[in-house]
Image 1: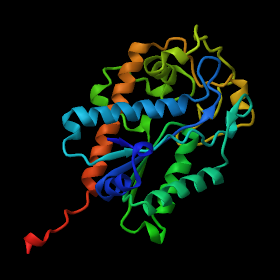
Image 2: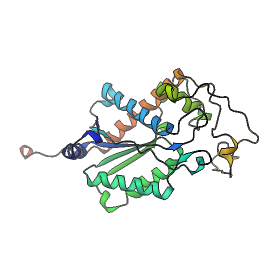
Image 3: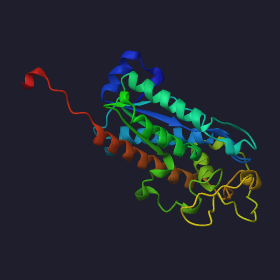
Image 4: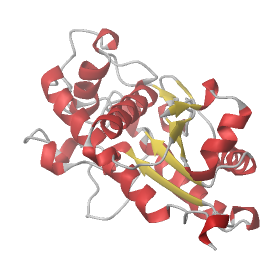
Length: 270
């Protein structure tokens, strides 16, 4: 496991030949009164770091290719949080940034790339960017994958900690529990109880399953969070973090196994 920032160009070229480049992406946006703006970036990095440690230490990582991690992209698509505070990229800008990063990696010799996302507002844009990039002529021979860290849970290790109704949510029980485990010093205490609002916001409670519903001013009306975070705790956060990290480790290993280049023939084989 290596960090791109610490490698020479020759080492990057050598790693790209058979390795996997991993780009974590997040956001800078309001997370209610108790979590920092960088929560999504910090959690994407925490899950990825734990996943790579699992790959290095346990059987899930047996034979997995060299992993090269890029510095996290700390800005995402967050216009819905500008009512309080955020640093937001437009959808077009984030798409262009991801496209440029992917193109740069390919030009630098990378043939397998994975994006690990920590912010819900990036999810659709990230997946579309990956699909679009695969259509470019210069992506021939290249495979790109993407996931948001909360979508790759290893349910065998969650130990009953999951609460699907509020996962991932925003600045609520799930993210606060994870932050109490990963960065407890950044969680402002006490975590306030969320005051119920009537009527419930439609973005988090659509009137019919499968229906995406947005209404102007909803985020400000509910105080910037989706659910009550006051019952979050570090022990639960560690279970949630471990389940996501183990799921991500398995996803990386599966991506590697499915896309591993064929071994090059040597002259002695003839």
